[in-house]
Image 1 (cartoon, one colour):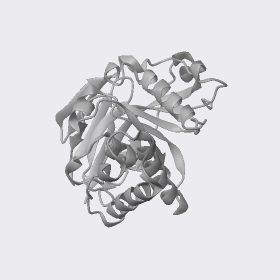
Image 2 (cartoon, rainbow, N blue to C red):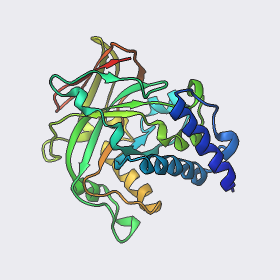
Image 3 (spheres, rainbow, N blue to C red):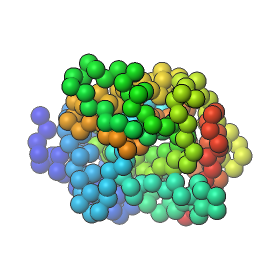
Image 4 (cartoon, one colour):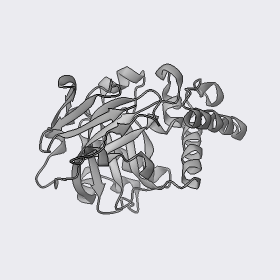
Length: 270
């Protein structure tokens, strides 16, 4: 088992990278390559520090849901992290919205996703009750989303425990304002095209996200239940990439077109 001193050292290393904007060495030298409880303990330490500084939890994200992203990251399974209010830059997608500052980011990439807003807690009496039907019934609306993933670890040289510890390589997120009921939209059937300055750089579909974005939501609900922190009504859930993530630069205009939704468009500044 990883010692509390090693977990604390990993939290300190990642926290310093976040505070200074200087990427750090991987933390797997501190927590190992397969101690997932230790990796999530580091993640919890990072999140708790941000909460103590005034942030609030607004939802969760699922990472590494598509085979394309798993290949990019060199991992073979999904993970999850927390969404905080300070990560929400959706105002930049509103009509007349200001460009999104890249100042908080170190090594950003962008990906198109389906997001869900929950109308109900997903906290049944037994884990076996967490079915596709249960999570579907808990969804209020689906939304188009852009996730700006980031890594505090230099050159994205990460293993699985590194990305878990680093809050699932979270950065910022953008969600559209007009949602769709699941009575009117089947997430598995959506297609996604992401362009940067008019050139398509990524594409995919709902089936690329663990076979179905609702299956990704079910997977997350099970993990959250096991960790004793179930998904709650009002939470926003980023269900995972529908295609590969891609780098971008200041001045770029990024547009995600996900079928069933209006295009989601943002620009970035230094």
